[in-house]
Image 1: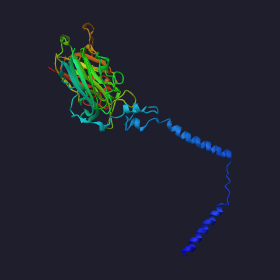
Image 2 (image 1 turned 120 degrees about the horizontal axis):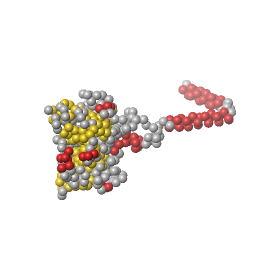
Image 3 (image 1 turned 180 degrees about the horizontal axis):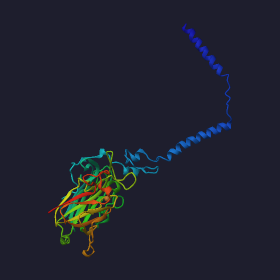
Length: 396
Ligand SMILES: [Cu+2]
C-alpha cells in the first residue's frame, strides 16, 4: 500500500510538470508599455531617496555626533554640521565627577603659593552638578568645582603663574580677558596655543601690569564651555592704593552674570539662537532668591564690580534707591572730571563696570537686570523676582 501511494504521487507530479511545459509564455504587454513602467519605477525610487534627503542631514554619522542630545526646541536643517550639534548638545550626565553641596558658592578667593616671588594658582576644570536654585541643578563645566570659578586676586605688577589641568571630556584653553601679556599666554585655542587635551595641564605665566576688574574664561568653544560655567573673576588691586582710596567706599561686591538652558533634566549651553535660548539667569552662579544679599548701613558706599561673564545678552543692570557713579570701565579708571552718574548700566558680554553706590535710605534695595524675562526662573517670578536679581539690605 505504501509503495503504491508513492508511485501514484510521483506519476501525478510528473504529469503536472509535463502539462506546464506545454504552455507558451506570451506577454500581454507591449515593449513601450514595459519601458514606461520601468521608467516610472526608477523615477519613484529616485524620488523616494531624494525627497526625504531634503529634510534630513545625510552627511551626519554616528561618529560625528555620538549620543548627542539636542535642545528640545532646536531647529536642525539638512546642512547642520555634526560639530555644531556636538557643541550645542546636552552635557553628558555620565561625565559628572563631583556634586557640589546645594548651598555651595562660587567665586571663592584662591590663595596663591609663593615660589621665587611668583604667585602660583592651580586651576582644574571638570564636569560637576551645581545648584543654581535649591531645586534646579545644572551640569556645569567648572573651575575648581565651583561656578563661577575661584577669584584670582593679585596686585598690579605681580608675576602670576596659573596651572590649568583639564579634567573635561573635551579639549579646552583659558583666556585672561583684558590683560596685556605675551601672545602665547593669551589663550585662544588653535590660534596662540594647542588646545589643552583631556588629562593635560597647561601653564600660563605673565605679569599683571594693569589694575582693575578683569576675568578669565574658556577660549576653546566658549559658546559651549563658557556658557556652561567656565569663567571667573581676575581682580588686580592697584600698586598705589591711593587710587582705590580716592573712591572712598566701605565694601565691594563682584557681580558675574550668566545665562543657562536647563530643560527636561539636561543642561545645554544657552545660545542666542532659536531653540537654544536661556531659561535661567545667574549672578555668581545663583538665581534669585538664592543670590547673596549685600548688608550695608545708611551712609556707607559699596563698589559694585559688574562683570559681563555671560555669553549672550547685554544686561541693563539697574540699582534701586538712587544713582551710582561709574568709576572704572573695563579696568580703566575714569578721570574724575569724566565720571557720570547713572542708575542703569548696560553690561555687555566681556564688559566690566565698577560703580559706587551710596546707601541713602534704609530698606531692601534691588539690583536687577531691566529685561524682565531675565528676572524670572524658567518664566516664573519667585519672591518678587528671579534670575538676575539681588538685594542690598540697608539698615540705620
Ligand atoms: Cu538681562
